Image (cartoon, one colour):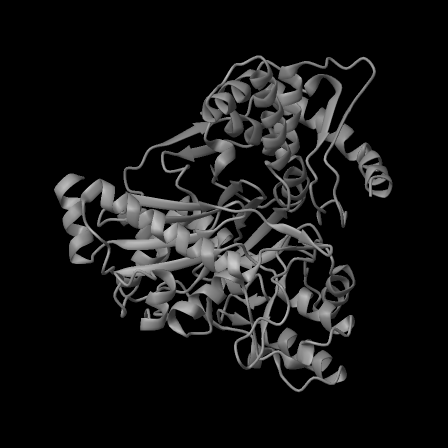
Length: 531
C-alpha cells in the first residue's frame, strides 16, 4: 500500500465512510482499490432516560468529531499526511427512530432510537391502515404515536429524519435519504423509489383528522437511489466534522443510508436471491426478494436495497449484549485469581469452547433480551438464563446457549420466509462482530437457518466500509448498476469461506428453539416481576 496510499490521501482520491453503530461510531478511509487505508472509532452507549432509549445530541456531535479525529490521527501516524480533500463521503447510521425538528432546525424531543418499543398502538393502527407491516421502531410509527399521545411538539414539526439523515443535513444542508434508509421511515414503492403514494395519502388524511396542517412529503426527506448526487460538504459542514479546519469544503456526498443498506453492500448482497445477516448489538437478516410475500407478516419488514429492490427484513433488537456480559463475567473471574487476558483472546477461546457443548445446549436456555422484541411480541426485555433440573450445566453449554440465543429470535422470522414462503436464496453472507472468531458464529447461524453461510475476508470491516463503497459508487453510477459495480469492481476475486450446516447441529438447534418458544412464558414472567 505504502507510497501509493499516501499519494491517494494527498491528492484527495480517497473516500470516507462513517457509520453510527449502537456501541461504536466507525470511520473508514478507502483507496482506489476499495481496500481500507485507515480507520478511526469512538465508543459510546445509549441511555435509558424516562423510559426512552436515546443518545443525547451533544454526544452525537462529540462522538462524530471524536471518530473523525481518531481517523485523522491514524492517517498521520501511518502516512505522515493530513486529510484535506476527499473524492467522496458517505454517512450511515442506525435505522429508524425519531428525530423531529422545528423550523429553526432545533430538535424537538430527545432522539428516540430503534431500540424503543413504545409505539405499539401506532404500529398496529398503521399496519391495518396500510395493509403493510409497520414495526414499532419505524419513524412513521414514532410520529403516529406522538400524535396519538397528543405530545405538544407535534404541531411544531417542520422536518423529520433519521440519525444518518441528520448528520448528512449538518454536512450538506440537504434534507435527503438513500432509498434503503427511507424505506425504514415509511413504506417505499420499489418501482418509483419513492414513498408509497396511496399510503402517504392515507397518512395525510390521518394528519388532517388530528388537526395538523403539514403532509408527509412536507416533513419527510426526499428519497434518492444509490449513486445519486446528494449535495456537497459545505464550509459549515467541514467545520462541524473537522473543527481543526484541515478538511476542505466541496466534497461530494452520496445519499445517507442505514446500517441495513451498508451491510448488504459490505457483503455484496444487493442482487435478487442473495441474503446477508448482520450480527452485532442487534441482528438482522436481509433477503432480496424476487416478488412480494403472499401476505403481511408482523415478523417481517419490507424495505429496499440502496438501489431500491424489495427486501424481506427480519430485525431483532438484541444479539450480542448478553453474550458480551457473560464473557465479561469470565474476565472478571479470571481477574480475581490475578490472571489478565486479552479480551479478543478471551472471546476466541470461549467461542471455540462453545463448540464442545451439546448440540441442544444440554437443557440450558438463554434469553438475550435487554430490550423488547417485536418478533416475539415483547415490549420489554429481561436477560434471563434458565435450565432444567438435570441440565448439563457446563461452561461449554452456557456459551453455546448464549450463542444460540443471539440468533434464536432471528430464526423465528427467517423460517417464515425460507420455509413457509419458499423464498429462494442462492447465498447467505454473515458479517459483524459475531463472525470475527473463525467459523464459530458462522456454524451457529448455518445450524439456525439450515443453510450454507459464507463469510468474506472483509467480514470484520462492517458497515462503515459498506458506506465508503456507496460513496465510491458516485463516480461509477453513470455506467454501472450497484450490483454490477460490486461484482466487477469491488468483490471480483475476493475470497469467501462457506460452511454447510452440520446435521446434528441443525437437529440440536431445532430442539433448542422449541424449548425457547415454550419457555417464553418464563421471560414474560420475568418482565412482569423484575421492575
